[in-house]
Amino acid sequence: MLDMNVKKYLLVVTVFSLILLIIPKGILVPTNAKGASFKEDVSSLECPFKIQTSLNFENFSYYFTIFTQDIQKSNYTLPGINGGYICIPEGVLLYAYFIQDSQSTLLFLGDNLTEKWKKEFPAYPLKHLNESLILVGNPRFGSSDTSCVYVIDISTGLLKNWFCPNVLGGYISDVKILHDRVYVTIGVPEAPPLRTRAFIYVKEGNKLRKSEIASISGEGVGIRLPIDANEKYVAVAYFLANERGEEKNGVCVLTARSLRKIACKELNEGERPLKVKVKDNIVYVQTTKGVKAYKILSLW
Image (cartoon, rainbow, N blue to C red; front, side):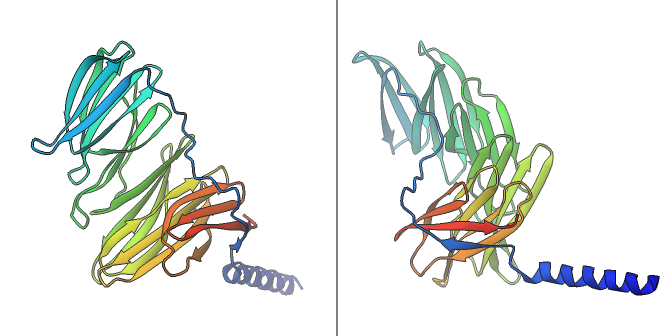
């Protein structure tokens, strides 16, 4: 009798396990996109002085001219063909960079316009989050170098966090920081056979996890992987294009910490994703043809 009970138990466990493998982990249901907002949760500060910028193509330099009360106070020149500035309560950060070479020069001035620190980074500014600056260093796509993410404190120039996915020739597309979690999306070339895979990584303390989002055969001549996250979910929209003119466009939702894939949804032809936003249990995707919204239904 005991053997029979054990057999029944094993049968139930086996059937239940098969059901878990077969049934979907969740679904994305189209819903109303009214009220969608793609604004970054970043506090902005208006500069207490006027800053004019200009680019000199002859020597690949970015010029900054600072005025207070319409009186020119100082001039600064930084190497780069792109640039900008960020104002925070402690002062202003001036930066210029080369995207192709992943090089940037950063200069921070205090509230009285005195130089506090100046540094060069093997990366270019991607975005800023309150008083932190996120920089990305990407090698030429398909090379044998690695990509890295750096997070620095704007007021001190000190490195707060960093992360280099252990892949060769990858291209970091987007970064999202939520509390102590750093999310990174990256396109990775592989051969043979030649194909491009899109991954998401999350670094939380010393823990590192990753999950594959999508892939496309051939060389990845177009890659965009915008990302957003809340306490429960992380969403990645994907645009992958190869040298033959083929494309893959869609959005995937995963659990925020373990990166277990809940569900994915392909977009219609020509709907390339530009931005993605997760709010409660709804994911919004801004595409080249409007905004789509999906309700996340999952037992996880």
